[in-house]
Length: 307
Ligand code: ADP
Ligand code: MG
Image (cartoon, rainbow, N blue to C red):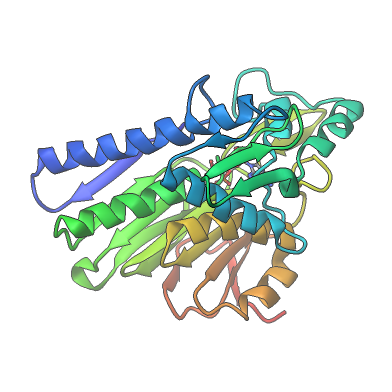
């Protein structure tokens, strides 16, 4: 998954830990697009040719990713693959593509052209050259499955961290404290901590994967409308929700909306909460029904979602 995986348990149960890591491995094998072979790659290889049947789990995740992509004004796009591959951000050989290269690929990223067949559980990419990329949501989906598995095994308290996707089971000593990283600072630099119980805490930031060219930083969350990295005031978004999959979808949606519209949209969604960190060192908090935030770095100012 391109990031460290940390599982914290309160019992010395190596067998259970090994089963969790096998579960993660199995889902990663099915969902990755960074290797030649996976269920998602089978769909991509058949683009413009024929539908491909996938497992129930992969189908459900693709279905959910397509729904999130079809939301009005959505910055989330499951068909963004051709652009991700062009930029190669976070991989060897990343560079700013030529305008024409981006223009050529944009028509290959239409989510409506990901054709689903519920009955057959098949996925068909209508145009040759199309590619699904579940990189923004695979970790969330897998984190949720790990949580389900641990609950099934009777585990009441645990912490799962899949590189930015944290799932906190239970509430040892009242709550879990999850750090919110300080963008572009040393690895252990924190802006603050979020206290939660039984919640997912997902952070996505423009400081995670990026490269520099022509005096500018180019990060890995692309705007499907332009083909270029999303560019606004936000340095990171943390979403607190029950499911980590929602956290993943919403971090991307919120990047696309920006602070003002993001706050407005969140007011309609009691189940999704956000912590924005902006370039001008503001920490903007939504309603705080599901978490408590403590500021640790006083070069930042806290404000509410008043927009
Ligand atoms: P991280 O891997 O740092 O947790 P995210 O969860 O924010 O990052 O997902 C970023 C990844 O999602 C990118 O590396 C790329 O594979 C994919 N991606 C980039 N832009 C979009 C987009 N607009 N919609 C959906 N997926 C995207
Ligand atoms: Mg994500």
